Image (cartoon, rainbow, N blue to C red; front, top):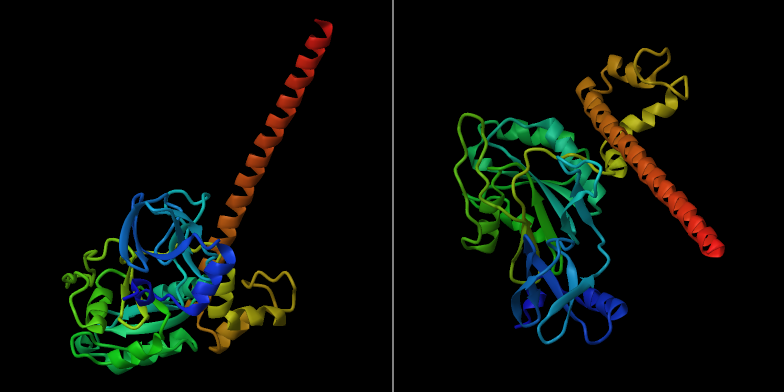
Length: 347
């Protein structure tokens, strides 16, 4: 059996490899990464290889040589990334590549966090994948209908699927959304039921699961790394560790997708440079006053918009400093070179 087919390899992927690599390079897919080591799926099975940190789970990579080494990866058509918590001006933290569907997992055994849902949807849209909201633990919810209705409203057109890994509800519908050659990544907080859902979909115990604290609804991290899990017919799941927060990175397009109705109001403001606070004729404040726009939603948008603007300002300052240092080095080198030439002529 061609193992690679189980991890989403299709004729389209094969054509991309033929275009980007010579015939001696063989296709593989990164199944998991662990600190300088990667697990890759190849035509003949799974390999564990040394690798730099530039590859991420989901990458399609080329292997070359009898003792295979990774030569590079295909251009990524989708990329889930976030700002690093302790190094905000460096490159973003890339979480996954080449995902087709991004499941925003929302557990029904705890109150809905609307701000988390909106933030995760912004990141999902910005990744290039198609977002879908997956409600889990439907068997544990006493407010089932209300939470589902609220989630559908907050998701604003994104498909919402309701599931229960324990009871088996909604699994067939979710499974039907993942076609052959497609990859669904699941993103959500710890204890949201992602691993239990994967076990239910694969029909076995593929992922560890853990208890959720009753006091705050938080679960322990049973998933420690992003890993691809085949469903058996070329469809692939990707489990991810639970994320407590999601700092956005270059997510303006995703912000516009989730909050497009708010941004459309800006054109109706009396002043082009309206700050949407106390200015007369502000369409945003008028919509809030009339009830057409929920103030909480406006504040959620504003927080993420300011977060992205602050990030870009800091990036611009850092880039100007780098350019200044480079210019000073160039001037210094030119002065030293001129001084050397003058000394050489005089000698």
